[in-house]
Length: 129
Image (spheres, one colour):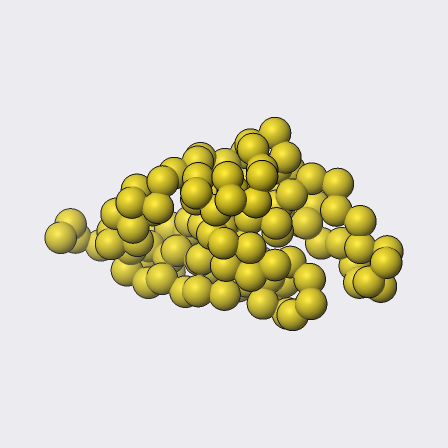
């Protein structure tokens, strides 16, 4: 394993946040986004993966008026300002839900489940929401 990179505040670790749940109905999606932003603020190597119903978190044109909750999906666009540029979507999850990259509101890399598995193995920390 490579030596950990250093920065002014300590050692840089690779954190992967795995979003598996739908964006509404629980706090998991919103909490994940907040944790990602905190990790990025502390100059960690952050990546975010959207798997299963988590792919809905970054779907364009969400209308939450019928369920009376705030639509926070546009907040994912702020990740770029925090230098979070490693966004991945599992191809199989997206296809199973009838979605394509054109349905997403942020730029992502589409990866197969096997490719995402390899990315997970490279991480120091994997957190699932």
